[in-house]
Length: 302
Length: 293
Image 1 (cartoon, rainbow over the protein chains, first blue to last red):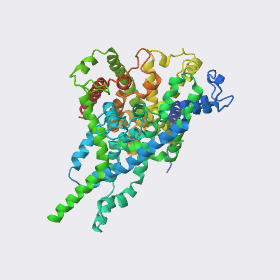
Image 2: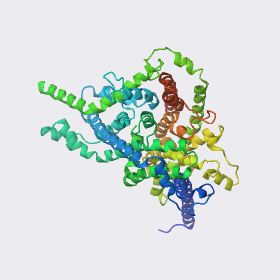
Image 3: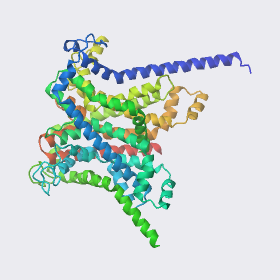
Image 4: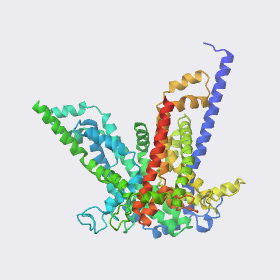
Protein backbone atom coordinates (compact mmCIF):
# COMPACT_ATOMS: atom_id res chain seq x y z
CA UNK A 1 0.00 0.00 0.00
CA UNK A 2 1.45 3.30 -1.11
CA UNK A 3 0.56 6.39 0.82
CA UNK A 4 0.03 9.69 -0.90
CA UNK A 5 2.83 12.25 -0.31
CA UNK A 6 0.46 14.71 1.35
CA UNK A 7 -0.59 12.11 3.86
CA UNK A 8 3.01 11.22 4.61
CA UNK A 9 3.83 14.87 5.20
CA UNK A 10 0.87 15.02 7.54
CA UNK A 11 2.17 12.13 9.69
CA UNK A 12 5.67 13.67 9.74
CA UNK A 13 4.15 16.91 11.00
CA UNK A 14 2.14 15.05 13.60
CA UNK A 15 5.27 13.25 14.74
CA UNK A 16 7.18 16.53 15.03
CA UNK A 17 4.36 18.03 17.05
CA UNK A 18 4.36 14.99 19.30
CA UNK A 19 8.11 15.35 19.86
CA UNK A 20 7.70 19.04 20.66
CA UNK A 21 4.97 18.25 23.16
CA UNK A 22 7.18 15.64 24.82
CA UNK A 23 10.10 18.07 25.01
CA UNK A 24 7.77 20.62 26.57
CA UNK A 25 6.58 18.12 29.20
CA UNK A 26 10.16 17.03 29.88
CA UNK A 27 11.30 20.61 30.39
CA UNK A 28 8.55 21.32 32.92
CA UNK A 29 9.20 18.07 34.76
CA UNK A 30 12.87 19.01 35.07
CA UNK A 31 11.97 22.48 36.31
CA UNK A 32 9.74 21.13 39.08
CA UNK A 33 12.17 18.33 39.92
CA UNK A 34 14.74 21.06 40.64
CA UNK A 35 12.25 22.85 42.91
CA UNK A 36 11.58 19.65 44.84
CA UNK A 37 15.18 18.46 45.12
CA UNK A 38 17.17 21.69 45.41
CA UNK A 39 16.22 22.41 49.06
CA UNK A 40 17.56 18.98 50.07
CA UNK A 41 20.75 19.42 48.08
CA UNK A 42 21.29 22.94 49.40
CA UNK A 43 20.87 21.85 53.02
CA UNK A 44 23.39 19.04 52.46
CA UNK A 45 25.74 21.52 50.82
CA UNK A 46 25.42 23.92 53.75
CA UNK A 47 26.11 21.11 56.20
CA UNK A 48 29.51 20.32 54.65
CA UNK A 49 30.66 23.90 54.01
CA UNK A 50 32.97 25.66 56.45
CA UNK A 51 31.33 28.53 58.39
CA UNK A 52 32.97 31.35 56.44
CA UNK A 53 31.77 29.85 53.15
CA UNK A 54 28.13 29.37 54.20
CA UNK A 55 27.02 32.98 54.03
CA UNK A 56 29.15 33.98 51.07
CA UNK A 57 28.32 31.02 48.85
CA UNK A 58 26.00 32.96 46.57
CA UNK A 59 24.88 30.61 43.82
CA UNK A 60 27.83 28.20 43.89
CA UNK A 61 26.35 24.72 43.79
CA UNK A 62 29.62 22.98 44.58
CA UNK A 63 31.57 23.27 47.87
CA UNK A 64 35.14 24.63 47.68
CA UNK A 65 36.14 23.07 50.98
CA UNK A 66 34.50 20.14 52.67
CA UNK A 67 34.25 19.86 56.42
CA UNK A 68 32.39 17.44 58.70
CA UNK A 69 32.72 19.63 61.81
CA UNK A 70 29.04 20.68 61.65
CA UNK A 71 28.03 17.06 62.09
CA UNK A 72 30.22 16.74 65.16
CA UNK A 73 28.70 19.93 66.56
CA UNK A 74 25.14 18.83 65.80
CA UNK A 75 25.76 15.64 67.74
CA UNK A 76 27.00 17.74 70.69
CA UNK A 77 24.08 20.16 70.77
CA UNK A 78 21.36 17.50 70.79
CA UNK A 79 21.82 13.89 71.96
CA UNK A 80 21.23 12.64 68.48
CA UNK A 81 21.77 8.93 69.06
CA UNK A 82 19.51 8.92 72.10
CA UNK A 83 16.73 10.84 70.32
CA UNK A 84 17.00 8.61 67.25
CA UNK A 85 16.70 5.54 69.46
CA UNK A 86 13.65 7.04 71.22
CA UNK A 87 11.99 7.87 67.92
CA UNK A 88 12.73 4.40 66.59
CA UNK A 89 11.25 2.77 69.71
CA UNK A 90 8.03 4.78 69.34
CA UNK A 91 7.84 4.11 65.61
CA UNK A 92 8.32 0.35 66.00
CA UNK A 93 5.61 0.18 68.68
CA UNK A 94 3.17 2.15 66.53
CA UNK A 95 3.83 -0.10 63.54
CA UNK A 96 3.40 -3.29 65.60
CA UNK A 97 0.14 -2.28 67.27
CA UNK A 98 -1.36 -0.89 64.09
CA UNK A 99 -0.48 -3.97 62.04
CA UNK A 100 -1.94 -6.39 64.55
CA UNK A 101 -5.00 -4.56 65.88
CA UNK A 102 -6.06 -2.83 62.66
CA UNK A 103 -5.85 -6.01 60.59
CA UNK A 104 -7.81 -7.93 63.25
CA UNK A 105 -10.54 -5.31 63.31
CA UNK A 106 -10.50 -4.81 59.55
CA UNK A 107 -10.88 -8.57 59.05
CA UNK A 108 -13.78 -8.79 61.51
CA UNK A 109 -15.63 -5.95 59.76
CA UNK A 110 -15.01 -7.45 56.32
CA UNK A 111 -15.54 -11.17 56.85
CA UNK A 112 -17.49 -11.87 60.05
CA UNK A 113 -21.18 -10.90 60.08
CA UNK A 114 -21.41 -10.31 63.84
CA UNK A 115 -24.04 -8.56 65.91
CA UNK A 116 -23.22 -4.87 66.37
CA UNK A 117 -20.64 -4.81 63.61
CA UNK A 118 -22.52 -2.34 61.45
CA UNK A 119 -23.11 0.25 64.17
CA UNK A 120 -19.50 0.15 65.42
CA UNK A 121 -18.26 0.49 61.85
CA UNK A 122 -20.54 3.48 61.24
CA UNK A 123 -19.38 5.24 64.41
CA UNK A 124 -15.74 4.72 63.42
CA UNK A 125 -16.41 6.00 59.91
CA UNK A 126 -18.04 9.11 61.30
CA UNK A 127 -15.19 9.74 63.76
CA UNK A 128 -12.77 10.27 60.85
CA UNK A 129 -14.41 13.67 60.41
CA UNK A 130 -13.41 14.88 63.91
CA UNK A 131 -10.30 17.04 63.43
CA UNK A 132 -7.32 16.28 65.64
CA UNK A 133 -7.52 19.86 66.91
CA UNK A 134 -10.54 19.06 69.04
CA UNK A 135 -8.95 15.95 70.51
CA UNK A 136 -5.58 17.46 71.42
CA UNK A 137 -6.42 18.79 74.89
CA UNK A 138 -8.83 16.06 76.12
CA UNK A 139 -6.43 13.36 74.89
CA UNK A 140 -3.69 15.03 76.89
CA UNK A 141 -5.93 14.98 79.98
CA UNK A 142 -6.94 11.34 79.49
CA UNK A 143 -3.28 10.35 79.38
CA UNK A 144 -2.13 12.55 82.25
CA UNK A 145 -5.04 11.45 84.46
CA UNK A 146 -4.82 7.75 83.50
CA UNK A 147 -5.58 5.67 86.64
CA UNK A 148 -2.73 3.78 88.35
CA UNK A 149 -0.02 5.02 85.97
CA UNK A 150 2.93 7.29 86.72
CA UNK A 151 2.04 7.73 90.38
CA UNK A 152 -1.67 8.28 89.78
CA UNK A 153 -4.23 6.79 92.17
CA UNK A 154 -7.39 4.96 91.10
CA UNK A 155 -9.05 8.26 90.22
CA UNK A 156 -6.12 9.50 88.18
CA UNK A 157 -4.92 12.05 90.72
CA UNK A 158 -1.58 12.63 92.40
CA UNK A 159 0.84 11.71 89.64
CA UNK A 160 1.79 12.64 86.10
CA UNK A 161 0.23 9.67 84.25
CA UNK A 162 1.72 9.02 80.86
CA UNK A 163 3.25 12.48 80.41
CA UNK A 164 6.95 12.21 79.67
CA UNK A 165 6.50 8.48 79.01
CA UNK A 166 6.98 7.04 75.53
CA UNK A 167 3.70 5.12 75.94
CA UNK A 168 1.98 8.49 76.01
CA UNK A 169 3.03 8.96 72.40
CA UNK A 170 2.26 5.39 71.36
CA UNK A 171 -1.18 4.83 72.91
CA UNK A 172 -3.28 7.46 71.11
CA UNK A 173 -1.72 6.42 67.78
CA UNK A 174 -1.70 2.66 68.54
CA UNK A 175 -4.80 2.23 66.42
CA UNK A 176 -5.81 4.48 63.57
CA UNK A 177 -9.33 4.40 62.15
CA UNK A 178 -7.90 5.10 58.70
CA UNK A 179 -5.82 1.93 58.93
CA UNK A 180 -8.84 -0.13 60.02
CA UNK A 181 -10.79 1.11 56.99
CA UNK A 182 -7.76 0.40 54.83
CA UNK A 183 -7.46 -3.20 56.04
CA UNK A 184 -11.22 -3.73 55.82
CA UNK A 185 -11.31 -2.80 52.15
CA UNK A 186 -8.32 -5.07 51.53
CA UNK A 187 -9.96 -8.09 53.18
CA UNK A 188 -13.20 -7.36 51.31
CA UNK A 189 -11.27 -7.88 48.08
CA UNK A 190 -10.29 -11.43 49.11
CA UNK A 191 -12.80 -14.23 48.31
CA UNK A 192 -14.94 -15.70 51.13
CA UNK A 193 -14.44 -19.25 49.87
CA UNK A 194 -10.90 -19.32 51.28
CA UNK A 195 -12.17 -19.43 54.84
CA UNK A 196 -15.27 -21.56 54.22
CA UNK A 197 -13.24 -24.64 53.36
CA UNK A 198 -11.35 -24.26 56.63
CA UNK A 199 -14.59 -23.86 58.65
CA UNK A 200 -15.81 -27.16 57.25
CA UNK A 201 -12.58 -28.74 58.47
CA UNK A 202 -13.43 -27.41 61.91
CA UNK A 203 -11.07 -24.44 62.20
CA UNK A 204 -12.14 -21.54 64.46
CA UNK A 205 -12.43 -17.89 63.43
CA UNK A 206 -9.08 -16.99 64.95
CA UNK A 207 -7.31 -19.79 63.13
CA UNK A 208 -8.92 -18.86 59.80
CA UNK A 209 -7.76 -15.26 60.26
CA UNK A 210 -4.20 -15.90 61.43
CA UNK A 211 -3.44 -18.92 59.23
CA UNK A 212 -5.31 -18.17 56.00
CA UNK A 213 -6.18 -14.49 55.55
CA UNK A 214 -3.37 -12.69 57.38
CA UNK A 215 -0.55 -14.27 55.30
CA UNK A 216 -2.38 -13.15 52.16
CA UNK A 217 -2.46 -9.57 53.42
CA UNK A 218 1.32 -9.10 53.22
CA UNK A 219 1.24 -6.35 50.53
CA UNK A 220 -1.37 -4.37 52.48
CA UNK A 221 0.58 -4.84 55.71
CA UNK A 222 3.77 -3.63 54.00
CA UNK A 223 1.98 -0.49 52.83
CA UNK A 224 0.54 0.03 56.29
CA UNK A 225 3.93 -0.27 58.00
CA UNK A 226 5.50 2.17 55.58
CA UNK A 227 2.75 4.67 56.36
CA UNK A 228 3.06 4.16 60.10
CA UNK A 229 6.82 4.52 59.89
CA UNK A 230 6.53 7.82 58.07
CA UNK A 231 3.89 9.12 60.48
CA UNK A 232 5.74 7.94 63.59
CA UNK A 233 9.18 9.15 62.58
CA UNK A 234 7.99 12.58 61.49
CA UNK A 235 5.30 13.39 64.08
CA UNK A 236 5.86 16.55 66.07
CA UNK A 237 2.77 18.18 67.61
CA UNK A 238 1.64 15.28 69.79
CA UNK A 239 5.11 14.27 71.10
CA UNK A 240 5.75 17.93 71.82
CA UNK A 241 2.59 18.03 73.96
CA UNK A 242 2.95 14.80 75.91
CA UNK A 243 6.76 14.82 76.24
CA UNK A 244 7.12 18.40 77.41
CA UNK A 245 8.25 17.32 80.84
CA UNK A 246 10.95 14.72 81.42
CA UNK A 247 14.06 13.73 79.52
CA UNK A 248 12.48 11.47 76.93
CA UNK A 249 12.46 13.45 73.65
CA UNK A 250 12.05 12.57 69.98
CA UNK A 251 14.09 13.68 67.00
CA UNK A 252 11.69 16.35 65.72
CA UNK A 253 11.69 17.95 69.17
CA UNK A 254 15.48 17.98 69.10
CA UNK A 255 15.44 19.68 65.71
CA UNK A 256 12.88 22.23 66.85
CA UNK A 257 14.89 23.09 69.98
CA UNK A 258 17.80 23.89 67.68
CA UNK A 259 16.29 27.14 66.40
CA UNK A 260 15.38 28.32 69.85
CA UNK A 261 18.94 27.97 71.11
CA UNK A 262 21.02 28.79 68.02
CA UNK A 263 19.07 30.99 65.68
CA UNK A 264 21.80 31.57 63.10
CA UNK A 265 24.03 28.52 63.39
CA UNK A 266 22.93 27.04 60.07
CA UNK A 267 25.81 24.61 59.56
CA UNK A 268 25.02 22.28 62.48
CA UNK A 269 21.28 22.83 61.97
CA UNK A 270 21.46 21.59 58.39
CA UNK A 271 23.68 18.70 59.48
CA UNK A 272 21.03 17.68 62.02
CA UNK A 273 18.28 17.98 59.39
CA UNK A 274 20.22 15.77 56.99
CA UNK A 275 20.75 13.15 59.72
CA UNK A 276 17.05 13.17 60.65
CA UNK A 277 15.97 12.73 57.04
CA UNK A 278 18.32 9.94 55.99
CA UNK A 279 16.51 7.05 57.79
CA UNK A 280 13.23 7.87 56.00
CA UNK A 281 15.08 8.07 52.67
CA UNK A 282 16.61 4.62 53.24
CA UNK A 283 13.22 3.10 54.08
CA UNK A 284 11.74 4.84 51.05
CA UNK A 285 14.34 3.43 48.67
CA UNK A 286 13.63 -0.10 49.91
CA UNK A 287 9.85 0.21 50.02
CA UNK A 288 9.20 2.73 47.25
CA UNK A 289 6.46 0.63 45.69
CA UNK A 290 4.44 0.47 48.91
CA UNK A 291 4.68 4.22 49.54
CA UNK A 292 3.12 5.06 46.20
CA UNK A 293 0.60 2.21 46.32
CA UNK A 294 -0.54 3.21 49.78
CA UNK A 295 -1.21 6.80 48.77
CA UNK A 296 -2.99 5.76 45.61
CA UNK A 297 -5.08 3.23 47.51
CA UNK A 298 -6.08 5.50 50.36
CA UNK A 299 -6.94 8.20 47.86
CA UNK A 300 -9.33 6.25 45.71
CA UNK A 301 -11.04 4.20 48.38
CA UNK A 302 -12.11 6.98 50.67
CA UNK B 1 -32.68 -23.87 64.54
CA UNK B 2 -30.57 -24.36 67.63
CA UNK B 3 -27.20 -25.00 65.88
CA UNK B 4 -27.77 -21.99 63.60
CA UNK B 5 -28.26 -19.80 66.65
CA UNK B 6 -25.12 -21.10 68.33
CA UNK B 7 -23.09 -20.47 65.18
CA UNK B 8 -24.33 -16.89 65.18
CA UNK B 9 -23.47 -16.41 68.85
CA UNK B 10 -20.08 -17.90 68.14
CA UNK B 11 -19.51 -15.48 65.25
CA UNK B 12 -20.54 -12.53 67.41
CA UNK B 13 -18.10 -13.54 70.11
CA UNK B 14 -15.28 -14.01 67.58
CA UNK B 15 -16.07 -10.70 65.92
CA UNK B 16 -16.03 -8.76 69.18
CA UNK B 17 -12.84 -10.48 70.32
CA UNK B 18 -11.10 -9.49 67.10
CA UNK B 19 -12.16 -5.85 67.23
CA UNK B 20 -11.70 -5.60 71.03
CA UNK B 21 -8.18 -4.04 71.17
CA UNK B 22 -8.92 -1.56 68.39
CA UNK B 23 -12.33 -0.75 69.81
CA UNK B 24 -10.92 -0.17 73.29
CA UNK B 25 -8.27 2.24 71.98
CA UNK B 26 -10.92 3.95 69.85
CA UNK B 27 -13.22 4.53 72.81
CA UNK B 28 -10.52 5.67 75.27
CA UNK B 29 -8.46 7.87 72.97
CA UNK B 30 -11.03 9.14 70.51
CA UNK B 31 -14.65 8.82 71.59
CA UNK B 32 -14.21 9.88 75.24
CA UNK B 33 -11.89 12.82 74.36
CA UNK B 34 -14.35 13.98 71.70
CA UNK B 35 -17.15 14.15 74.29
CA UNK B 36 -14.79 15.72 76.86
CA UNK B 37 -13.81 18.45 74.39
CA UNK B 38 -17.36 19.74 74.22
CA UNK B 39 -17.82 19.63 78.00
CA UNK B 40 -14.49 21.23 78.83
CA UNK B 41 -15.14 24.23 76.62
CA UNK B 42 -17.76 25.32 79.15
CA UNK B 43 -15.37 25.18 82.11
CA UNK B 44 -12.53 27.30 83.47
CA UNK B 45 -10.25 24.27 83.83
CA UNK B 46 -6.55 25.06 84.20
CA UNK B 47 -5.17 21.54 84.65
CA UNK B 48 -4.65 21.76 88.41
CA UNK B 49 -7.77 22.91 90.29
CA UNK B 50 -11.25 21.40 90.21
CA UNK B 51 -13.10 21.72 86.93
CA UNK B 52 -15.62 24.54 87.33
CA UNK B 53 -18.56 25.12 85.01
CA UNK B 54 -18.66 28.72 83.81
CA UNK B 55 -21.33 28.62 81.14
CA UNK B 56 -20.67 30.63 78.03
CA UNK B 57 -17.87 32.74 79.58
CA UNK B 58 -15.18 31.20 77.36
CA UNK B 59 -17.20 31.80 74.23
CA UNK B 60 -17.95 35.42 75.19
CA UNK B 61 -14.27 35.96 75.92
CA UNK B 62 -13.34 34.54 72.51
CA UNK B 63 -15.08 37.32 70.69
CA UNK B 64 -13.32 39.99 72.75
CA UNK B 65 -9.89 38.38 72.30
CA UNK B 66 -8.29 40.45 69.53
CA UNK B 67 -5.46 37.96 69.02
CA UNK B 68 -7.86 35.08 68.52
CA UNK B 69 -10.02 37.11 66.14
CA UNK B 70 -6.87 38.02 64.24
CA UNK B 71 -5.91 34.35 64.08
CA UNK B 72 -9.28 33.57 62.47
CA UNK B 73 -8.57 36.20 59.83
CA UNK B 74 -5.07 34.85 59.33
CA UNK B 75 -6.26 31.28 58.81
CA UNK B 76 -8.80 32.44 56.22
CA UNK B 77 -6.01 34.24 54.36
CA UNK B 78 -3.89 31.10 54.57
CA UNK B 79 -6.68 28.82 53.30
CA UNK B 80 -7.49 31.17 50.42
CA UNK B 81 -3.86 31.16 49.27
CA UNK B 82 -2.98 27.54 50.08
CA UNK B 83 -5.94 25.44 48.91
CA UNK B 84 -6.24 26.68 45.28
CA UNK B 85 -2.45 26.53 44.85
CA UNK B 86 -2.32 22.92 46.02
CA UNK B 87 -5.28 21.76 43.92
CA UNK B 88 -4.17 23.45 40.68
CA UNK B 89 -0.49 22.56 40.97
CA UNK B 90 -1.05 18.95 42.01
CA UNK B 91 -3.48 18.36 39.14
CA UNK B 92 -1.16 19.91 36.53
CA UNK B 93 1.91 18.10 37.83
CA UNK B 94 0.03 14.78 37.93
CA UNK B 95 -0.97 15.32 34.27
CA UNK B 96 2.70 15.92 33.45
CA UNK B 97 3.77 12.83 35.40
CA UNK B 98 1.20 10.75 33.50
CA UNK B 99 2.88 11.41 30.12
CA UNK B 100 5.16 8.91 28.43
CA UNK B 101 8.51 10.73 28.52
CA UNK B 102 11.94 9.22 29.24
CA UNK B 103 12.85 8.95 32.93
CA UNK B 104 9.27 9.29 34.16
CA UNK B 105 9.87 6.81 37.00
CA UNK B 106 12.79 8.89 38.27
CA UNK B 107 10.63 12.03 38.15
CA UNK B 108 7.92 10.30 40.20
CA UNK B 109 10.45 9.42 42.90
CA UNK B 110 11.96 12.93 42.94
CA UNK B 111 8.54 14.57 43.17
CA UNK B 112 7.73 12.43 46.18
CA UNK B 113 10.79 13.48 48.23
CA UNK B 114 9.26 16.50 50.08
CA UNK B 115 6.53 14.24 51.42
CA UNK B 116 9.08 12.03 53.18
CA UNK B 117 10.78 14.56 55.41
CA UNK B 118 9.20 15.69 58.62
CA UNK B 119 7.56 19.10 58.52
CA UNK B 120 10.02 20.19 61.20
CA UNK B 121 13.07 19.21 59.12
CA UNK B 122 11.75 20.78 55.92
CA UNK B 123 10.81 23.94 57.82
CA UNK B 124 14.40 24.18 59.03
CA UNK B 125 15.67 23.90 55.48
CA UNK B 126 13.29 26.60 54.28
CA UNK B 127 14.23 28.86 57.18
CA UNK B 128 17.76 28.78 55.80
CA UNK B 129 16.66 29.14 52.15
CA UNK B 130 14.56 32.17 53.09
CA UNK B 131 17.21 33.79 55.28
CA UNK B 132 17.40 37.45 54.20
CA UNK B 133 21.23 37.44 54.23
CA UNK B 134 22.95 34.63 52.38
CA UNK B 135 19.77 32.59 51.87
CA UNK B 136 19.49 30.84 48.52
CA UNK B 137 16.18 32.43 47.48
CA UNK B 138 17.44 35.98 47.88
CA UNK B 139 20.69 35.02 46.14
CA UNK B 140 18.64 33.83 43.17
CA UNK B 141 16.49 36.98 43.20
CA UNK B 142 19.59 39.19 43.28
CA UNK B 143 21.19 37.21 40.46
CA UNK B 144 18.05 37.77 38.37
CA UNK B 145 18.25 41.49 39.11
CA UNK B 146 15.14 41.46 41.32
CA UNK B 147 14.87 43.14 44.74
CA UNK B 148 15.49 40.87 47.75
CA UNK B 149 12.47 39.71 49.75
CA UNK B 150 12.03 39.82 53.52
CA UNK B 151 10.21 36.44 53.57
CA UNK B 152 9.43 35.32 57.13
CA UNK B 153 10.81 38.44 58.82
CA UNK B 154 8.15 40.89 57.69
CA UNK B 155 4.49 40.79 58.67
CA UNK B 156 3.49 41.53 55.08
CA UNK B 157 5.33 38.60 53.51
CA UNK B 158 5.38 36.07 56.38
CA UNK B 159 2.07 34.36 55.61
CA UNK B 160 2.90 34.09 51.92
CA UNK B 161 6.21 32.44 52.85
CA UNK B 162 4.42 29.94 55.11
CA UNK B 163 2.04 29.12 52.24
CA UNK B 164 4.97 28.48 49.87
CA UNK B 165 6.58 26.11 52.38
CA UNK B 166 3.34 24.25 53.09
CA UNK B 167 2.47 23.89 49.40
CA UNK B 168 5.95 22.56 48.71
CA UNK B 169 5.78 19.96 51.46
CA UNK B 170 2.21 18.70 50.89
CA UNK B 171 2.07 18.77 47.09
CA UNK B 172 3.56 15.29 46.65
CA UNK B 173 0.84 13.25 48.32
CA UNK B 174 -1.87 15.07 46.37
CA UNK B 175 0.02 14.54 43.11
CA UNK B 176 0.13 10.80 43.81
CA UNK B 177 -3.62 10.66 44.51
CA UNK B 178 -4.32 12.47 41.22
CA UNK B 179 -1.83 10.28 39.39
CA UNK B 180 -3.59 7.08 40.45
CA UNK B 181 -6.91 8.55 39.31
CA UNK B 182 -5.40 9.57 35.95
CA UNK B 183 -4.08 6.08 35.42
CA UNK B 184 -7.62 4.74 35.73
CA UNK B 185 -8.77 6.83 32.74
CA UNK B 186 -8.88 4.46 29.75
CA UNK B 187 -6.47 5.55 26.96
CA UNK B 188 -9.23 4.96 24.38
CA UNK B 189 -10.92 8.15 25.57
CA UNK B 190 -7.91 10.26 24.53
CA UNK B 191 -7.43 8.37 21.29
CA UNK B 192 -10.90 9.16 20.03
CA UNK B 193 -10.49 12.78 21.14
CA UNK B 194 -7.22 13.26 19.28
CA UNK B 195 -8.77 11.63 16.19
CA UNK B 196 -11.41 14.33 16.34
CA UNK B 197 -8.56 16.85 16.36
CA UNK B 198 -8.81 18.06 19.96
CA UNK B 199 -5.57 19.66 21.14
CA UNK B 200 -3.69 18.32 24.16
CA UNK B 201 -4.76 21.27 26.31
CA UNK B 202 -8.38 20.89 25.33
CA UNK B 203 -8.20 17.20 26.14
CA UNK B 204 -6.92 17.95 29.63
CA UNK B 205 -9.49 20.67 30.19
CA UNK B 206 -12.55 18.99 28.70
CA UNK B 207 -11.88 15.27 29.23
CA UNK B 208 -9.40 14.69 32.04
CA UNK B 209 -10.70 17.32 34.45
CA UNK B 210 -14.35 16.15 34.42
CA UNK B 211 -13.28 12.49 34.63
CA UNK B 212 -11.23 13.02 37.79
CA UNK B 213 -13.85 15.26 39.43
CA UNK B 214 -14.43 12.78 42.31
CA UNK B 215 -10.69 12.85 43.05
CA UNK B 216 -10.68 16.64 42.97
CA UNK B 217 -13.51 16.56 45.46
CA UNK B 218 -11.55 14.23 47.75
CA UNK B 219 -8.30 16.22 47.47
CA UNK B 220 -10.17 19.49 48.05
CA UNK B 221 -11.88 18.16 51.18
CA UNK B 222 -8.65 16.84 52.66
CA UNK B 223 -6.72 20.00 51.75
CA UNK B 224 -9.36 22.21 53.38
CA UNK B 225 -9.49 20.19 56.59
CA UNK B 226 -5.69 20.04 56.76
CA UNK B 227 -5.23 23.73 55.95
CA UNK B 228 -7.39 24.90 58.84
CA UNK B 229 -5.15 22.95 61.23
CA UNK B 230 -1.72 24.16 60.08
CA UNK B 231 0.66 24.22 63.06
CA UNK B 232 4.15 22.69 62.72
CA UNK B 233 5.60 25.21 60.28
CA UNK B 234 4.27 28.15 62.27
CA UNK B 235 5.51 26.81 65.61
CA UNK B 236 8.97 26.17 64.22
CA UNK B 237 9.42 29.17 61.91
CA UNK B 238 7.59 32.23 63.20
CA UNK B 239 5.99 31.44 66.60
CA UNK B 240 2.97 33.31 65.28
CA UNK B 241 4.92 36.49 64.51
CA UNK B 242 6.01 38.95 63.29
CA UNK B 243 3.37 41.18 64.91
CA UNK B 244 0.92 38.22 65.11
CA UNK B 245 0.78 38.08 61.31
CA UNK B 246 1.02 34.28 61.30
CA UNK B 247 -0.86 33.49 64.52
CA UNK B 248 -3.33 30.79 63.48
CA UNK B 249 -6.03 29.17 65.66
CA UNK B 250 -4.03 25.96 66.14
CA UNK B 251 -1.06 27.94 67.45
CA UNK B 252 -3.32 29.98 69.69
CA UNK B 253 -4.92 26.78 71.06
CA UNK B 254 -1.51 25.26 71.73
CA UNK B 255 -0.08 28.26 73.57
CA UNK B 256 -3.27 28.86 75.57
CA UNK B 257 -3.48 25.23 76.66
CA UNK B 258 0.12 24.30 77.30
CA UNK B 259 1.97 27.56 77.98
CA UNK B 260 -0.74 29.44 79.85
CA UNK B 261 -2.65 26.47 81.35
CA UNK B 262 -6.01 27.74 80.14
CA UNK B 263 -7.28 24.37 79.01
CA UNK B 264 -10.98 25.23 79.16
CA UNK B 265 -10.53 28.40 77.14
CA UNK B 266 -8.34 26.58 74.59
CA UNK B 267 -11.06 23.93 74.22
CA UNK B 268 -13.56 26.65 73.38
CA UNK B 269 -11.15 27.93 70.70
CA UNK B 270 -10.86 24.40 69.36
CA UNK B 271 -14.65 24.14 69.13
CA UNK B 272 -14.78 27.37 67.11
CA UNK B 273 -12.13 26.02 64.74
CA UNK B 274 -14.04 22.73 64.49
CA UNK B 275 -17.26 24.58 63.61
CA UNK B 276 -15.40 26.57 60.95
CA UNK B 277 -14.08 23.37 59.38
CA UNK B 278 -17.53 21.78 59.57
CA UNK B 279 -19.29 24.73 57.92
CA UNK B 280 -16.72 25.03 55.13
CA UNK B 281 -16.83 21.27 54.45
CA UNK B 282 -20.65 21.26 54.39
CA UNK B 283 -20.78 24.25 52.03
CA UNK B 284 -18.22 22.61 49.77
CA UNK B 285 -20.17 19.32 49.72
CA UNK B 286 -23.36 21.22 48.92
CA UNK B 287 -21.73 22.92 45.92
CA UNK B 288 -20.29 19.62 44.81
CA UNK B 289 -23.76 18.07 44.69
CA UNK B 290 -25.04 21.04 42.68
CA UNK B 291 -22.31 20.70 40.10
CA UNK B 292 -22.94 16.99 39.73
CA UNK B 293 -26.63 17.49 38.98
